[in-house]
Image 1 (cartoon, rainbow, N blue to C red):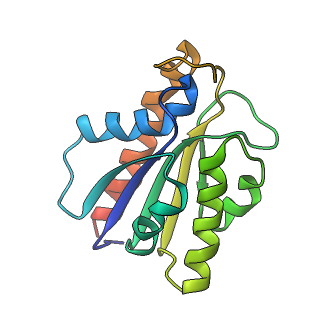
Image 2: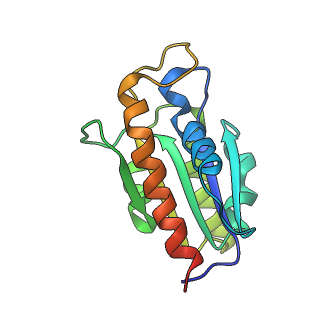
Length: 157
């Protein structure tokens, strides 16, 4: 299905190692790809609720983030639409609470995107440190490729 506005949002704090996974993924995807003007890349950092408009204004959204599923291995996870609330209840930092709240507010406003996907991986190192751990650096290209494949499916009919 083709969407008019696709927002790709990277969440995380790049000052805390693997917590910056989402921002690193968005930057890598943007630098390594060429998409039409309907695809917008947003460095969401830790802005939380201030990113609400990027959710509500889009037909489809991909969010990259460091995440901790209930039971996990160190791998890339992809969550679609209704799967999101089941995993978000486990918080790692303040921006995740903001993301959970954004989804709730967008639903209340009746402005949820037709598709919303979260792509992420469990962090290994959350210490004050710029750059991803070697373990997450290996997963970054996998997450980026997952995002690229989803975007490509959204921009073609």
